[in-house]
Image (cartoon, rainbow, N blue to C red; front, side, top):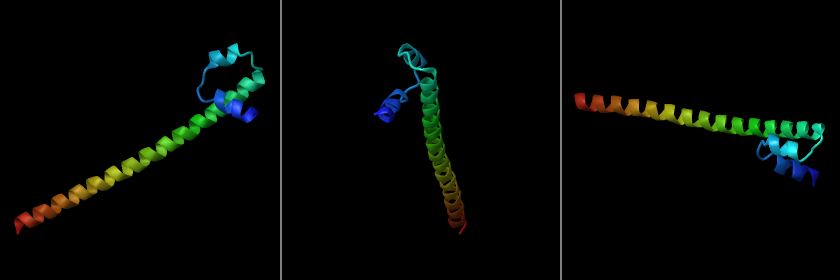
Length: 77
């Protein structure tokens, strides 16, 4: 139950809500640490997705260049 409550509280960082609830400082610190870890995980996932998209884009650029070169060769023949 405690884990579920912490999960719900750390879905969004809301320091005002956390302060109004009259939570112990230790618990607020723990919640903030959990929130920070979640944000790091989300950031890494987005960074990985961005890297994948950049790789795809680079491959597409090379393929475009290859096709242009191939077209030029065909036109010269």
